[in-house]
Image (cartoon, rainbow, N blue to C red; front, side, top):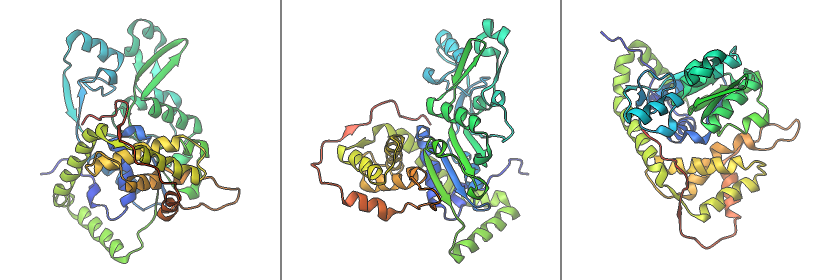
Amino acid sequence: MHHKFVIFPLSAIVGQDLLKKALLINAIDPTVGGVIITGDKGTGKSTAVRALAHTLPRLRVVEGCPFNCDPENMRLMCKACQQRFEREAILPWVEKAMDIVDMPLSATEDMVIGSLDIKRALTDGIKALEPGILARANRNILYIDEVNLLDDHLINILLDAAAMGVNVIEREGISLYHPARFILVGTMNPEEGRLRPQILDRFGLCVEVGALTDPADRLEVIKRRKEFDRDCWTFEERFADQQEKLMQEITAAQGLLGDVQESAEMLEQIVTITASLGIRTHRADIVMEKTAAAIAALAGRTTLERQDVIDAALLALPHRLRQKPFEKDRPLDRQQIESALDQQIEHEQPEPFERSGDVKKKS
């Protein structure tokens, strides 16, 4: 008898390649800054997000730690685990699958960052913290359905934590912190309201998901859904090899990411695209560079190619395009990006240089 809860496999989703690529990029390098997925209901947004967690490699976490600390990386530990690591050198750990942590629209600030017992905090430090959503989200996936309906203040708290990789709790002059490195995913239906441009810009990537238009693809969606509903365990086994292959590709890309090199020419292509499209934020350039590197790593390469930069632009720039009042959304297409690059002045190809910083990801 089967007892486990079966999730529709990511590799079984028909089409939606751009959506799947955006999710995988964030799995390879969470510092990309998450992804916001827009589109009509019933187009597979939530299905893809929940499938991602069951595709990613299992984690080693410190046993009993409410923050899912990495038992081998002191830099990614809470204060209590750091102190224990300094004393014992080796921390007991358990292996667990990545979780989806749902963000309720009715959440309060204390529910998100955690509540603090002031009296205990003076003596017990981090142990006085009642962990919140950000604690559970550390090293997991934080999912906000209908993110456009969430209070702006809470969105900013989440985005601040995602950017810094740390959740800071300050009450009555007392300040505590714990790691908060997570894959941030928000979904929304634009017909139900939009996010302010300032908030949109803080999401690393953006994907617009639409219903499949090819009748053959739509027919395949029906067939796979019926097959899954009839016998989900057999359906899962059918895609087991593809899921295993995808997991291995993610793990390999995480290990390869720190070795990816960019030439000055590739970096110049990035800024040429953003400048020609009138992008008014430097965050776009930084996100494009990280995204292109993750795309190259996923392809098993350590050097960037022009195609990586173009693919990165299609994910990192759509929500950052400027719009005039009453102007309809301007879809960003590959032709616009290639046209911008074709107009670039040719420069001598310099020697590649290694990416700076500690960007290697642990599996």
